[in-house]
Amino acid sequence: MTTASTSSPLPPLSLLDLVPVTEGSTPAEALQRSLALCQAADRLGYTRYWVAEHHNMVGIASAATSVVIGFLAGGTQRIRVGAGGVMLPNHSPLVIAEQFGTLESLYPGRIDLGLGRAPGTDGATWRALRRDPHAADRFVEDVQELQALFEPVREGQTIRAVPGAGLQVPLWILGSSLFGAQVAAALGLPYAFASHFAPPALDSALRVYRDNYRPSARHPKPHAMVGVNVIAADTDDEATRLFTSLQQAFTNMVRNRRGLFPPPIHQIDSYWTASEKHHASGMLACSVVGSPDTVRQGLHDLVQRTQADELMVVSPVFDPAARLRSVELIAEVGGLARTALSSRSP
Image (cartoon, rainbow, N blue to C red; front, side, top):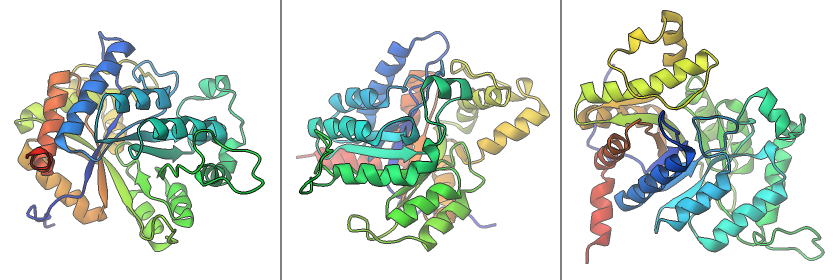
């Protein structure tokens, strides 16, 4: 098998942040660390910075997704900030239109709204959210209702989002299966595949999306974003060590034992069983871990395979300084830092 050439430029790079609460820290500290990372991403030239809706998870501090987006957008200047995503069946489309219409009014031209169908939690929390058990079945209709609420008000329209109407906040469809690909294609919307935790259907979902895409007024061509875990460090060995935090977290998911984000360890094989390694490594198959040269080759290989229009990088690292270093190195690999610096020069 040949590897992709690294001479061609990578597509735009964005960041997904679950606002991890690390062992020994608090949600308040996690939010402040995410703000600092978002500000760094803004300086470095990343395209977007997304946070995701998860509930009743002690290791994730982004449950109030629209509030977190406002906090991050208020502390940055250029970067697009958004949801990757909002789990629409948990909410009324009108409420989401009002929330993101407010964000767009405060930070015009910088807000994204990615939409998912999953509950973003477990069954008990799903019931605590007062979620309609049939809401997921109406996902397509709810997306269309949300689209309509962002359009200019029509004569005789009785329900409107204030603010929101006429703002046309950009919508994305998120997915980890063929369903989201089909919805995004049918509605002519950009599509983001969650290959950073659910990679098996990546290739088939992208094929379904592109083969069935129906051009829309705002999006005449398909736009596919691919999620990928990327842990970069100065050496392959150091990146491999940092990656053990995420490997432990996914092993804990296999054990049905979620907790705070753990510190790295030197030998991951001392933590998981052979069966746990098989399952966790399968979920983490779309990961690139190593020095800048290793990361560069890995990302080019992924782009050659998927023809991704954009990469959504997930770089969860326990130590804030090492996490920032990872994001800086990824930006250098993608040529973002040079672009950002040149765009700010007189």
